Structure formats: C-alpha cells, structure tokens
Image (cartoon, rainbow over all chains, first blue to last red; front, side):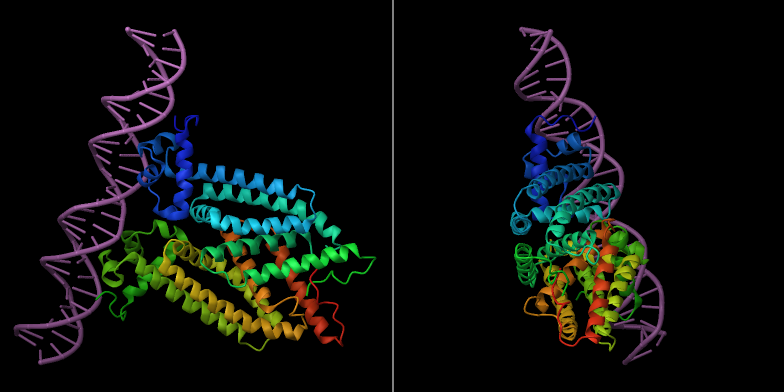
Length: 210
Length: 210
DNA sequence: AATTGGATTAGTCAAACGTATAACACGACA
DNA sequence: TGTCGTGTTATACGTTTGACTAATCCAATT
C-alpha cells in the first residue's frame, strides 16, 4: 500500500532533501510541504511513498546508518598499525562536522528521544558500532601490552565512544575549547605506546594511567 | 511591556510545566495551549508573560542553569579529598537521570542547535562549567603528582566533560552498556592514585596512561 | 491504437497552531 | 464609594499543519 518500490529518483530526492533540511533547520521545523519543496516534488508524495513523516525519518535513519557502518567496518579492517586507524577516525570527526553529517545524526537522536521506535533502531546501530570498535581495540591493547585487568577493553571502548559523542555534541553547540588539546594528548600517548612496543623487552612502565 | 514582574505563582507554574513537558514529550511537541493546560493556566498568558515560546524557553534555560552552577560550585568548594568529590559528581549522574533533569538539558541543547540566541547562552554556561572543573582538577592533579606536561589539565578536563556528556547522551537513547565498567575503572584508578599519594617518596610509576 | 497501472498533480478538509484583543475580576488606593 | 491597574479569561482571526482523494499524466504493454 504505502512505500512502493523506489526505482525512480523521487524517493531518493526526498531522503536527500530530508538530510539537507535536518542540517539546515532541524527535525522540528520540517513539514511535508517544506520537504517537498526542497525535494522539488509534490507534497502529496510524502504520504504516497512513506505514509507519514515519522516513517520517512525512519528511512532516513536506515540509509544513514548503512553508509556509516560500512565506512567504519572498512576502516578498521585495514592492515595499518592501530595509530593510523585512530588518526583516520579522528579525521572523520572533522570531515563529518563540516559536511553536516553529525548534525543529521544528532537530530535523529533528538527525534528518537521522544519516539520509541526510532530509539530502538538507533540503539541497535550503536551496538554495532561498539562491536566494531571492540574488535579493533582488543588486539591493539594486547599488542601495546596494556593491563586489561586494570583497564578492561569494554571500559576503554566506552571511554572512547562517549568522549567522541561528547565532542560532537559540544561542537554542534558551538564549543571547541579543549578538543585540540585532548586529541593531541591522546595522539602523543599512542605514539609513546607505539615506540614502547618496538623497543620493549619486558618492562611495563607505560601501562598505568596517569 | 512583556514579562511583567513575577510576584505571583503563574510564571513559576509555566516554567515548572515547561520542564515537565520537556521531559515527557520534548520541545518540538510543546505548544502554548498544551503548556497552559499543564500549568493550569490560560493559554493567553504565555504571550502575556513571555511574549513568545522562544522567550519562555530562554527563561527555562536561565532558571535551570542557575540551579546547576550553584550545585556544581558548592560541591567542588568542599574540603573533602578529590575522590570524594568525584564520587559525588558521579552520583549526580544517576540522580539527574532519574529525575529527568538531563532530559531537560539535552532538549534545550537540541533546541539551541537551530536557535543562535539560545546557543550562545548555552555556550556561556558551558564555559562556566569548564572553569569550575578546571579549578578543582588543577590542584588535584598536582596533589596526585601527575605529569601535566604529558597530560595537560585542559585536556583532562575536556576528556572528563566530554565522556560525561557522551554518557548522558547514550543513556537518554536507552543505552547503558559499558558505563558501569568505565566508571569502575576510573574509580579504582583514583583509589590507586590516592594510595600512591600517601605512600609516595619520589617514584612516579603511576603517572603514565596505559 | 487501445489499455493499463504506477507516478504525479492540484485541491480539499478538519484540526491545531501562534497571536491578538476585548472584556472581566478584584484588591489597592484615593 | 469610585477609580485604577494588574492578573486573568474567553474568544476570535488568519495561517499552517498532516492527512487524504479525485483527477490527470505518461510510459510500457497488449
């Protein structure tokens, strides 16, 4: 009934327009008519293809997370040393900010706070993200000789994910203070770990948190 | 003209109702009429007292941040050892979640993403928070003998603030995984620092990150 | 050439919206 | 007692909203 096959470009045009408007005005200011105008289509088609605005946002989320997870997987699957992957991930932090990509993610998040269905979908994608990171961190921590008794992989992954989310949140609020210092600190710490890994015999002086 | 003196309880009733609705339905679903009903007042009074919904949200933000900063200041001003202050702060993380306090903060944040005026006000409050934390962290790090060359105070404060924001964000999205492990890791690390502080002569084996 | 069916259009509809205003209540003050 | 001003109410106005429908278009098929 609703949601016919998307063999033509109209559905894609709606999804693209929705992403653009999420960046520009936020989910609360998107109406069917405004969306249709942005997409260059008739506003009746929103109901025709998606049934409702809520279902449209679900489609936006699905397409968005598909692209994101694909990118994440590809990055951490490479053969480069961990520090290179890390730097790549941190460069995404800048790219995604300028492209407005993070605004989309947070707007969908804010929308989900008041919509159980979207919330569950977002939580599922989050768990995928955690799993991907855990797979990358566990061997890296072993390689660096970190004491996983004192510093469990789960805790380290959670730390990294949460402070990344915090940075994204702050930047969207127009706050940049301290981010550079923090990322520089982590980077130089990784460098020291990388160096210790090469020249290590059996000393563990780089294992403890400050 | 607008915003007469608030000597009666109606203005407060509106602000309370707004906070309740921010928790329950989010900013996008709050209308003047629904707000007035929640406050038990006539919906014409919203315009009478605040001029517009936007100005009402500004008032909500002001009252909210005033209470928050006051609490923060009082906590970090105490004489207890740093680890006690830390535990108190982390207990707020739970209390504020259950009271819905964090939902209010994030809803205002999301609203501010698309409203420059609110955005600037929130950024100002954020800087106050950073300043308060920096004043508490700097002496603590010196006391623990942490190498502020490798681990600058600014970077550590930013790390703590951002991962806290990340935790709040995740929890609002229904995600709890890893938070307990992370907080436990930090707590035991602080305990080891506290112990090292007492029994220290001049060895610095607890200074480095893992 | 005729037919068919999905894609698209224009327009309708009731409900809800923010805003505004005239009228009312009532204690303070003259 | 009469007047004044603030707090409050009831109501109205014009607009916009999401949802829906009937009519039209058009390319592919028969």
